[in-house]
Image (cartoon, rainbow, N blue to C red; front, side, top):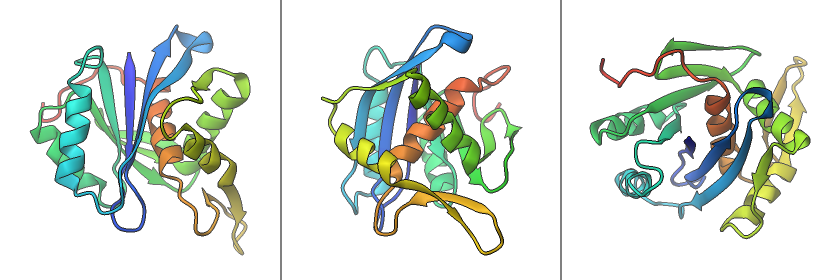
Length: 193
């Protein structure tokens, strides 16, 4: 099974996507990054939808790849464009504060940023997530991972984000894909069912 994470941006941050291939089951499951994409600033959302749909229609991804979209902010209307394009299975993840997660519906999830970041850390530290150095944008992903920091607010709450002036789009696309892969829904329903 494959998982495509899509973090949307446009004018300030680029849109980024990653495709992970899963191997094995349970506590021994591993993931290989097979595709990284960072779209140029200003790329229109219809162009992104078209490009991602074209990628997901290629073999071996066709009908074996779950699309996971960062549903926060502008993500909801773009999610709807993918639904209209008949991309299935599809999940929209709204990134929240706190330390928990829940499924609003099988296709609409709310996940705290700390859980997303923790999932990436767990798999990187255990060697169960591999990112080929020769992939386009692999060096940029490595840089984003290095620049991703915990900040403690005056109210003693933790926030996770890139250093000021840096981007975290590839990290977030990786985090949502990996989280969805590790938390399969009990039964996938087509959107609109």
